[in-house]
Image 1 (tube, rainbow, N blue to C red):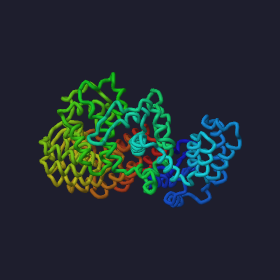
Image 2: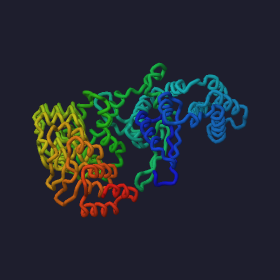
Image 3: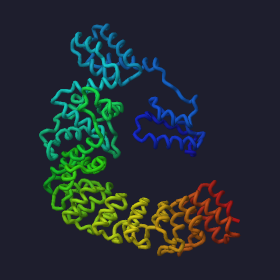
Image 4: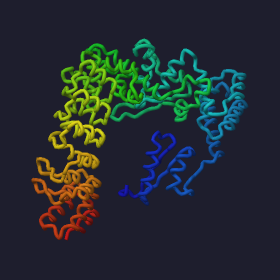
Length: 580
């Protein structure tokens, strides 16, 4: 950001962020940078936690509270525009007094709430007689909650089942849903086993607007590729989701629309599984007909995300997952043809065969399905079966941080030192992501900390390059003499990864020698210079300055040469400062 003359950043609607604590920490960090070229505009409703967080680093004179009368004028303009341009209000164009009554009533009742005015206009647009209009104006709900309660209560009994399903998905979906996907969502029956009925699909996807009234809207989402933009269905406003998941809805007449997190995620997970279970034949899906199954991509990619959100997988959900994760089932093949868990970049491939796929037990471990893992083990699954990106279920569970599953697999006889897969063994896999507890479990089970192989050669090298210094402490071995086949030390790897804190730990606590080079004569300082890791570079240079009387001219010249080519001028000055 320092590279630009001026930087302008706008954070709109802070109150709509689900991770408020993390967001406040980010804003506080950015403020501490004190960049004179950076200007930020933050907008939010006046909520206590946000206000108290911002007050720490934003001066009071920088606060601007939008005055109600100014907002009322904007609401008035919006109401006037709707009355003039919305064809549903054309029936009153010959009577300006009616329009004036609508405008006056709404501006007065809105009390600065745009969303309230929008919902009332949507309701008034349906009034066909003067009497109906007068009754509606007199009985307008005073609050947004009561407005939503009235809208939901007015949905017909026939449409209510559809509305609950649609609102459930829009509230908790992992990504925005297209019109075509929503049209198919309502065709999944959860009364017994989850099943999809093609005859229940909405013939006109736009009917979703009639079913859910003012609670949803249609937006356009630009394609990430060069493809055409697509229409997506979203909740009409953040306050809709806020209301649906709150306790407040349970106190009104629309209580049956209350969206409970675990219940909704379970229903969506079962819906996804039920949708996938329709693909019983290996020839049912192909490149030619894949687009006919609009919900296939979402179901294949995200059913597991919804299962995880149910905390403990329900019996129904586990049974349906077991059916999917059956190597004798065409459903399993079709699922993996649509989506490869752990490797989303691969995309769909409808030519894949069962022989090229890992066994279902591998994916149960990878995806963290504890209940399914137990069921498959009871059914005779081979706990040490090889296959998949990570080689076996234990390595897959270790890299993903599924601690309980790691324990289950070890208790079932999994080989803790089994070799293979991307990271060579389970210990290196756990070290990659810094899963300290899993590292402890594996070490207690007899994992060999010196085992070679995998992407980083060794678990401790992995911890060093990724900056997980706690893993080094857990290992409880003298790591100062460890070297890989190229004579690279843990300090060398930490410097290569730009891990300044790990570098400090290795030097200050483990007393690693800075001047040990690899078989090519490259020191930790050399690789830090080559990779432009400024903090590591400054620390190592300072240590060398304090502990060495000189650095040989050849090494100094080599490092300066690399440095000049790879690092900005001001960092070069820092480096030269430490060479006698």
